[in-house]
Length: 119
Image (tube, rainbow, N blue to C red; front, top):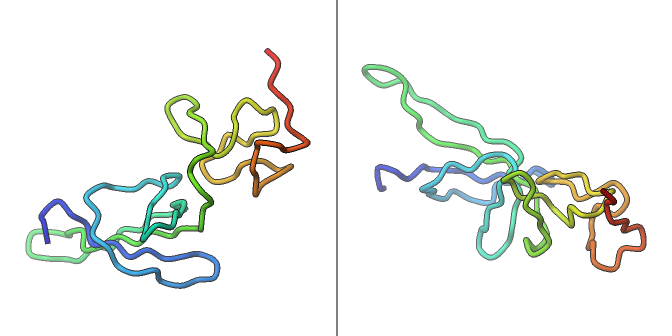
């Protein structure tokens, strides 16, 4: 194991099941997306697990709680973060996890409720 890689267990929230253990060289935050064997998952929660060793506690592993995500092709950049769907629509939730209340599964393209934000 490389010193900068983190042992990480990926857990699907619904239905609850472990998707496996992987080594990550980055620290995923809630709202980030994870590509695992060609499938995309939105990170909902991150839990740290520590173990006491001589001199103090050391990070032993991380658990990521994820939900399945559709393709990442429909995203918008808002204030330096990626949100799901077309952020130009007034119904967009501006969220990394939820597209909108009107059409949460998408796609935005062709949605009959789509309304462009008027400034």
